[in-house]
Image 1: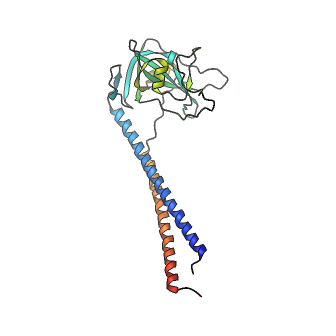
Image 2: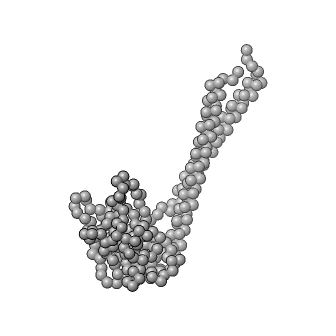
Image 3: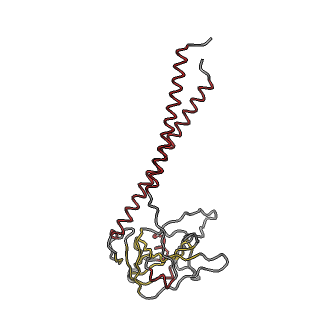
Length: 267
């Protein structure tokens, strides 16, 4: 006669091992997808940086504004529309990115958003961040293109209005520089009344860093796809071990059933 508790243990073991196989294989597939994503990012970076430098003008075709391409823009700074992007760290130090539009054409109000650099956070209670002086006149800026300002994680505000949201109109009353978490280009264009190019220029020219003190060591996306592939192999290996254990348990259960059948019912 079959032991009920033995059968229950066998069924439970098969169920748990089956679930483990599904979970482990799913984790392996997820790591492969992450590997493909990082491989695509690396390919985009390499393709963009291989292109010839681009001169940004109001007439530049949008198809030429590819991410990671080196570009130049000549125009006048509009410091009244500057914003500080909060929670941007550098070498473990909290700080801000300074974003300022560069006016390319005054008649059409065509401009490009420039990430000018990083500056350290001011200790609470010690006033506002000290922004570098903005050069006047026509400036030529060199940098790398991206399709948007890199986003940061946003927390929902329980009070309704988010204090870190972009003001509806710039410049703000009192002449302060807004501190925001993120900077969507469409919202920025509405707040400033500018016709913004659909790209962002991250300034890389080191000659300006000497005079303005801004750090232009921009963070790079993680492109180590080999690590994700290695993790995928590990998860698949664990899944294979769980599958073998499932087969061993199932085989043992079948063997015991056959033995009981051959021995017949016990008195």
